[in-house]
Length: 283
Image 1 (cartoon, helix red, strand yellow):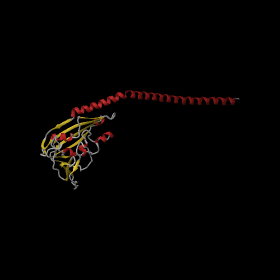
Image 2 (cartoon, rainbow, N blue to C red):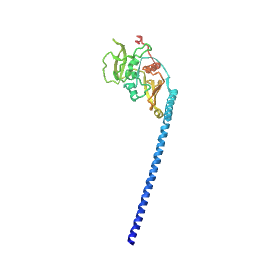
Image 3 (cartoon, rainbow, N blue to C red):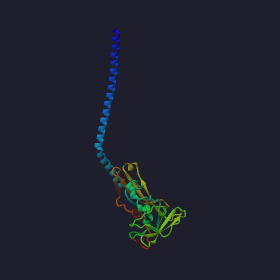
Image 4 (tube, rainbow, N blue to C red):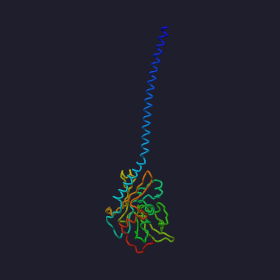
């Protein structure tokens, strides 16, 4: 009987030990569960706060980025002419633009470099801008560029396509010179072009995009159209503009307003005034 009592006593102690272990494990689990629930509740509260303040944040961000864009416009945008030159016969395009369609790229979110200053006409048919006779202004006798003929085919009845009076000959020189030949038999104009190794132009134009880290943060692009004298590298005039895209809404705008297909030549001809040509313009 004594042995049985001892065994029962030992079993009781074992059960007490096991019960204590279970209690300890339960308490540990319960503590972790409480900690998890507390963390979960905090997370839910944080998400709720974020959802509540998001419209305010979005409004504030949109207002801040637009305010920044408008501030840049007011301070820096515009036309700045430092010196004009009269009786200019021709000029050199130092940096041709990407001929891919501007509006397609905007719709697809693939913004070209300097989206403010980029136009399809300068990118695709720059000779039509500069050596096409116009009743509104004199035109240049020639344009020199590194862009080969038919680089970026483009057709639009609002503006003449380039029609070459003769097949261009690729002789391996670095540049091409475009000159007006005369009206085409059907409509539009004829041009002649030849490859050259040396420039005849004394003056040139180029462009560049400028973006600071703050510009990138607020969706702003600055662009400059620059007119210069080749020999001295003197800057004769600069046209500055800005492009803005709201990354949250996709809205886009520019400054200054009034961008059009001929804005490049409109500005350049104020700085480099074309020599008069006696045969007048077509339209």
